[in-house]
Amino acid sequence: MPIFARLKPKDPRQGFPLAKLTYDRIRFEAGGPAQEVTRKQAMFLRTCRENDSRPGSPLAFEVWEGTADGPVVAAPRPPSPPPAPSPVAPRPTVGPITTADLTPPKREPPPVVAPPPPPEPHHVPLPPPPPPVPEEVDPLPPEAPAVVAAREAAEEANRRMVADRFPRKPKPDRYRRKK
Image (cartoon, rainbow, N blue to C red; front, side):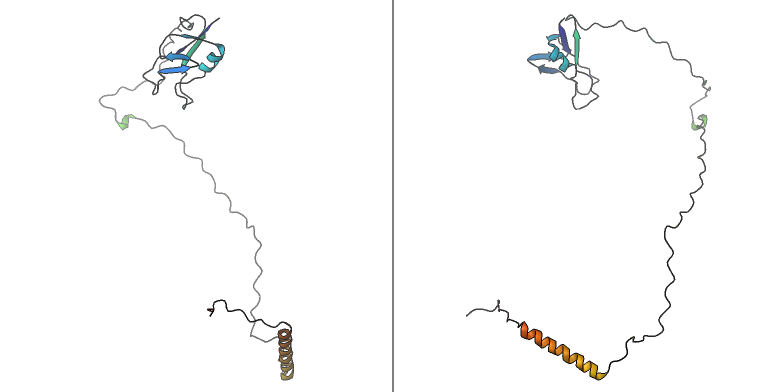
């Protein structure tokens, strides 16, 4: 059974109608005649939308099997019964409607929620500070002058020994102008 496809006619309510399209060497025009297509072409045309950048855009093609006259359309549905009347009868009004005529919806007060209990401390209390030191007292007794002199002499001998072993080289004067 042959498969036919037709570009849907332009709808002025749609913001971006598709007017013409050429696919696989078949030219379709909006509201134009149906064209016979292969099954592979029909699968693609069934997914085409009028605007590819909008996913909710309507499908651009009608694709059907059968005759070129058009797709078989089911019989129209009978009209639905009228809606049931509202259970709230309208109040008769005299003159223009004002805000006094409107009744605000009843609202329940928000539930009262007790505040959360204060958090327990997560730290350990600090120990009390140490008692203050009464006066500055030198913890070491004063040394005898002979001990101080001997220590200074040993330090001087040590300095001389290091200087003899590792003599200092004079640094080159890099910034001096050569003659």
